[in-house]
Image 1 (spheres, protein in one colour):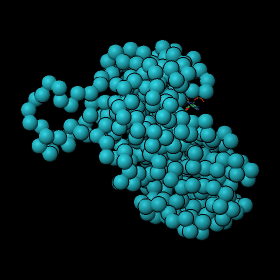
Image 2: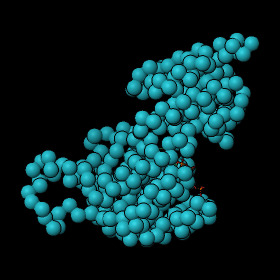
Image 3: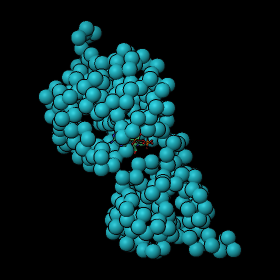
Length: 328
Ligand code: NDP
């Protein structure tokens, strides 16, 4: 009987995913997939979800009312291959009684590691330096050339001391950081204790940090939070890093701050939109390092994410408790 129930499950996968995940998923029965590395066109998505029981999607798929209507009442579970869920219309999903799976924890280490890499690349001007070696700009060892800012004895401010924020702080501590500050909705005494991190208002974090690192989730509260007002409060010698979501930052204001020298440099793994068009003004700046949203991109992490996303979907479809279910 279990086999018969499984055969009835129809699943749609919106992209080519690591084979480990697809193999796990194929146990669900009828798997239909947009088998490409490129995003699914909206018309294909609407047609693909119709009548499905489960949907495995990515952060680049906007799962809104239109998509949910196209899926119809059969849709019971949405599993996203991400920890962020700002691309899902949560209220609409809740109304329809659909369960949601996501991939927290398993991507924390990879994303924290990338955040540290981006911070060092930005503060020590690595892309600019590599470019100078290639274009003949490296003429001799110069005492005042390609200087940047170091972590030793610095104050680091973390916006959103969640899973990734804490993992970043623990990795930065051995670099000799003097003080950690953090901002958020609530103080987190347990997480903060080992780091001796101080819970402060956002304005104080901006004023006192030598490095500001954004690792919060994108919610209405955090949308556009890093704006002109925020950058003006930062020190002229401070470095800004964002590995959360692009829209937490007002990019026009960030551009102004970088051009006018209100801040020293910025490193972004996430932008608005994604991909960032090649003619975006931020890309013309030497003091802005932009990566193509690769926070969780290690082979092992992406494999693990695909398996967890598959297992979330399967468990949800069977009515069992999911390995990682989002509390709606
Ligand atoms: P968590 O839920 O553990 O952490 C999110 C944190 O955001 C919480 O600590 C929360 O604090 C904080 N937060 C909420 N509202 C605010 C606010 N108004 N001001 C400051 N902080 C706030 O999630 P993760 O650490 O696992 O992931 C964080 C985000 O990172 C994801 O939502 C995703 O968008 C992004 N991400 C990016 C990746 C990349 O490739 N670049 C990879 C993985 C994740 P509080 O409890 O006080 O509300």
